[in-house]
Length: 211
Length: 300
Image 1 (cartoon, each protein chain N blue to C red):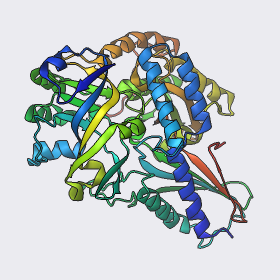
Image 2 (cartoon, helix red, strand yellow; image 1 turned 180 degrees about the horizontal axis):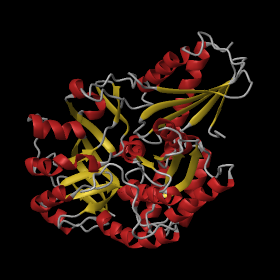
Image 3 (cartoon, each protein chain N blue to C red; image 1 turned 135 degrees about the horizontal axis):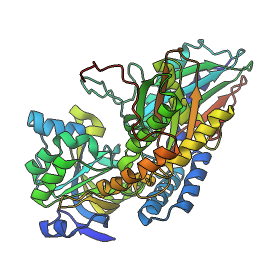
Image 4 (tube, rainbow over the protein chains, first blue to last red; image 1 turned 30 degrees about the vertical axis):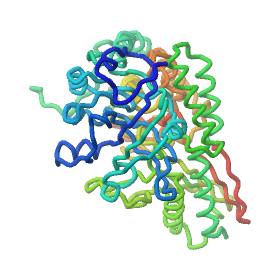
């Protein structure tokens, strides 16, 4: 397990390999669909120092008011694939070297991560309750009234936060793409044993004769 | 007569338990899967998830933060009498859902599909969903609360109208492709419970898939031998994909395949696919006519 410090340096990001298991320590900010859409389509983003708060955690945490501040009840990384339309633009705009989420992202974001020297970290199991304890401080929240607790941007200070694994490296590699190639290789044999002919096609009623 | 306040309390109690306790059949299936996997990442995905569920059961958070769509599956007997009538179930479900959200057992997740406005209590047109069925001649009311996570619903829902000429070969292809797509990169949070609907209209078909995924106890097979055999065949096929927990390299993309059937049009073979995520969130509250409530993670 590698212990990474945030913000991640370009050298460190480029030294990480697919499948490396890591934790992170330092500041990060949260967001999901609304952050992406607003930042790119509407020119609205929280006034953070993105060189310092450089890690983008894809999550909608469960938050509870406590005293003057907030307590994290649970925070489970959400599926990052949904943000692919805006992923590359957000990485380039804020110079992000660390994305933390679930699943993976697509070729556009992979290219942007190559350019800035960044990685995508994917979650290991469901760990929202451990992650909650690893949030040392809820530093600030932006757009709470407009977006609600789930989509608001929270800034957390985290310590030994994780574990995560490197699902996209700074060289354009993707752990899940590699694995899917093995699945593609296994499929014909599985389908054959299920009695599905290699040239099987569903009955198609929505295309004209020329399609 | 079952009082409204008892119904609200039972709905809330079922939501609370569903949000914080993993059903025993799901837990046992995940432990079997963990014993079987050999890839270190696959094993860690499951170990971490089981540990997370243990923490939730001790009052240290939730089984998963994405408490998703608030669903209630309700069964009444022919002698069940409710204060305010059965129409009162909708407002009771709203009250229980709003309270569970206020107490941070449910994340405020339901929003307007167009404006994306969030009322903050998971209550709005169509949600919470109350599915009411009648069965038996009892006087009890069975409530199953199933807050269904976004990952499984968003990435694990497929429907296709097949035709008689496509036959079971088409069904097999549709299911195996859907498993592969939905489990890729851990989209539906595998190991998933796969519900399949065959027949009916499109809505009946999808409702069967949803009920099979959410309500069927793991390990229970369909009573019709031909359907049970298809369930087993597709489950075994899924284990050869090479997809494991959370999309890792492994065996257990799927914990179970459950198929439900309805008669359909002689021209049609509708098939629906709905996945439930590895936490399999559901809990049952059974209210007797004397207002006593019994909670159980066993739903059979």
